[in-house]
Length: 121
Image 1 (cartoon, rainbow, N blue to C red):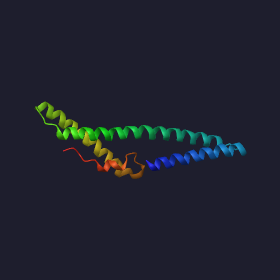
Image 2 (cartoon, rainbow, N blue to C red):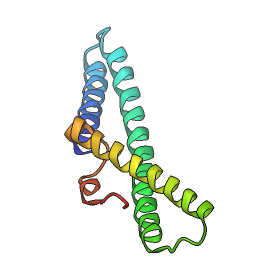
Image 3 (cartoon, helix red, strand yellow):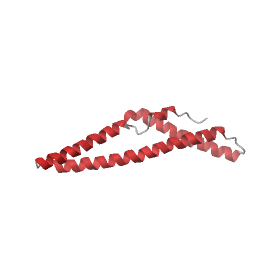
Image 4 (tube, one colour):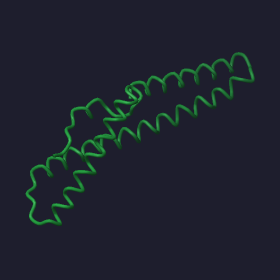
């Protein structure tokens, strides 16, 4: 996530530079570059906010449901099937998150704490 914050700051600085440069020296390129930079800053901030809330919510759900599923005693076969299905779903999310963190490294939106999560047995 730090890389995305740095990229956003670079675009914001580029936006500020273009606005200041255009105010002092009129050039054709400053306004379109400022517009694209401003749009990039807006999109990056929105994506970081949405992803940040979504990922932290997913981690919280995984942790809570993991504790519940590991301590729950199964009563009948239908409940066992539902719990097994939920374990598969949660483990799939965990493996996807860890794969994205491994594959994209610093460019991944997932925090390093995703490595501390253990699959549900």
